[in-house]
Amino acid sequence: MLAQLLLTALTAVVVFHSLTYTLYLYEKRVHGPPRPPRPLRRAFLPWLAELGAILWVLATWPLG
Image 1 (cartoon, rainbow, N blue to C red):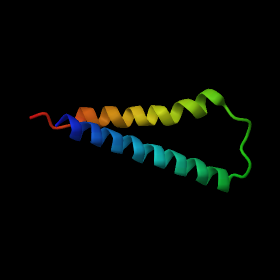
Image 2: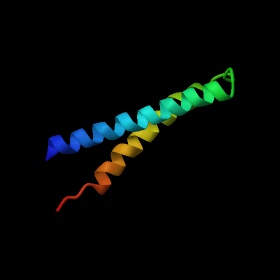
Image 3: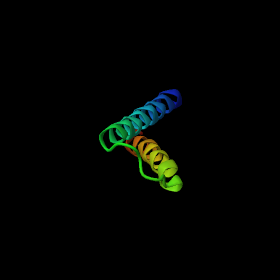
Image 4: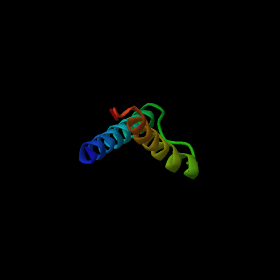
């Protein structure tokens, strides 16, 4: 059960990371050259989304 939980959490991380990266590439292509980067925001938001995905998986995991 633990292996399945870890695999599900890892899958959620990969999916959310892929989505955030795809959105980044789309915005880069549509909006042209990026503005000066905001290092904290650029580094923090994708990891926050991945952490949210892991917590969502853990919160909705059927325990019974």
